Length: 615
Image (cartoon, rainbow, N blue to C red; front, side, top):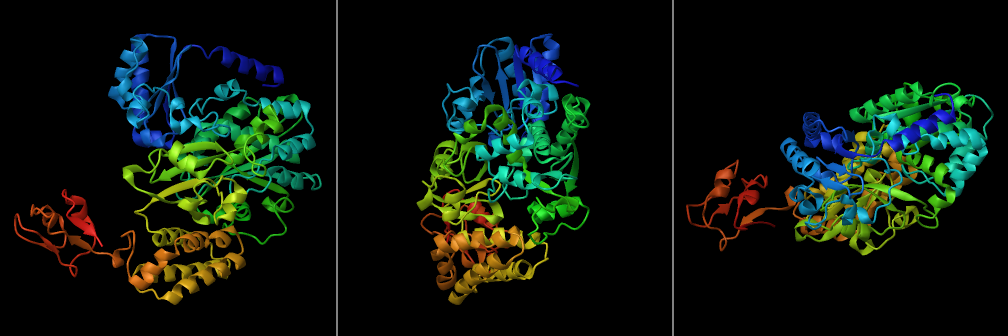
């Protein structure tokens, strides 16, 4: 492909070929883990046996509603899209016979019948999960075949790259990104255009464009889903960034634990090279740019930009002191920029639709949309993309469907191990960079974990701190030693050995680690502890003073008890107890020996009469 005319010809051909019935099967990690491959095979076999030439079966990325995988969506000309969920091979055969051949929707397999949205709701687009979403970064995920460059081009893919190479100067590209208000989606939200400007201002010479695809937050899978569902969006954006700063080479640093993302990225890079959209003299404009993949070994600290670049260089992934910043001295000592996957996924749309279009979404200081991986104690789990400024309540109660099993919302954790826990009193806080910082959390990469009344906030703080202790590179003393001391205090409190002065010691230590650590890992590691101390201090006090865990989570501070008036003497609990701690005769109330009980919860889970309680 040597010219813009050839690129446009492919786009027009693909748009013209869009007619006909299409069966899309979600084959991202979530779908494959749930058994989507046999579903795809069943549809392909059915189409082949029927001889129908106007029906296409294709894989796609994550459709978004992960809890209902495997998910299949069927589009037909002039008809509403139909979303089938929890599919298997046998269901696929029935859907093909009745829907594709017979023209009748199999209602009991649709999203509405399975999600409570209503038996007459057939399309995911008409559910509360989707109605408040605005898809920009995720626009192609669940829509196109991620292993087909032609399908990407058919959605105006690589048109933005063509536009900047043929109609814009590098400075105009940077000015457009600045005017859009796009901020980094991987952490603190630094303005993307400013970062590009700093690198562009450096003297001509070797420069690098880097992509942080080393998504490591527990519960976060946004970047993985973009790479698995729309890898060309990242490749195109990195080429645009290369043109803007004067770079001819880029690196995508992706964790090796993402094998499907790695595979699809490599396929996309090879396809882009074969089409002349990477390499030398792109679209005949004289611009050269190419990409390489580098696999990370799962070190969380390599999410920090200087540690990531050090790892690409083949060294131990440790952060470097700043300044100099990477825009001045980055990868291999040369000016470099680093943005994460979601940030790049917005760039092509900004170029095509304009800075004003992007800036029209969001808040005064946080423009555009944000992708969240919604998980935890929530009815609807999966990927959501909402305009900045959407409240936490809207995300949890409307998009997420609320808390299951009649439980009460307790807190939401944003920003992963670097973030904080947001209590119910801040449910109506508009989600953007500044508002989250005001209430003690951060945007981070976009993990959003919902907790209910059964979660212990001291235990939650300990969970995230255990993660950061394991992931600390050990280079600086405040992080290497300070986080371990913090964890020791938390272990002391949750084991029932805490003293009131430990709470004050913990808070002081958090502030020392936060202010003295070298990089963002150590500087933000205290956030989950500080936010739980701020909003749930009473739980810390209960653990220390009363030797009780209000949520009945911390084993050393709880015990199981059998209520005599409810016990039927069925002996089920005694038979299930692995250590013989339960005694009693048939049809008589049983008893638990607290000295023998190992608090495994087997009796609690077994009892059908609600006779066993936690105290």
